[in-house]
Image (cartoon, helix red, strand yellow):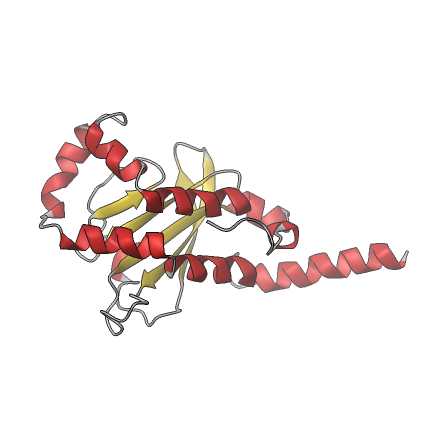
Length: 196
């Protein structure tokens, strides 16, 4: 009986922690930790060094097939792999991507509808946030997965010192809202599990 009461209390405490915006503190911590990952930061540095006008790339991006060299270079970017690994730990499905300082895609786990993300709230509302802050949006329809996502975004600051006061991009992670609301993925997550 004590075990059952402990389980119910554990569930209620977990639900309360997620009540504000649907994302538990341990997932928040993992997304913030991922923003300091060397692979994430290196991808943004490479992207930001390229001269691009990302607004002009939306139409070619929309017309590009998922197996085209350009799309694959973004989907197979090492940062896409580490973002995908985090999504798989906490959600059955989802999407994630990195947006460079110019609003263009640096990495993505799926082919997004737009290459230019600089006019989206997940970029505009996040790029000037202080280090360690999060932006959360719930009930985002994911057409390919047929589910609702919770999107969490955070600015990415250079941990190696180059731009301590200016974000070099934005990390966006979308997780399956149903999974987060009805299972305690944080409880299942082991800190000893292999990290990306």
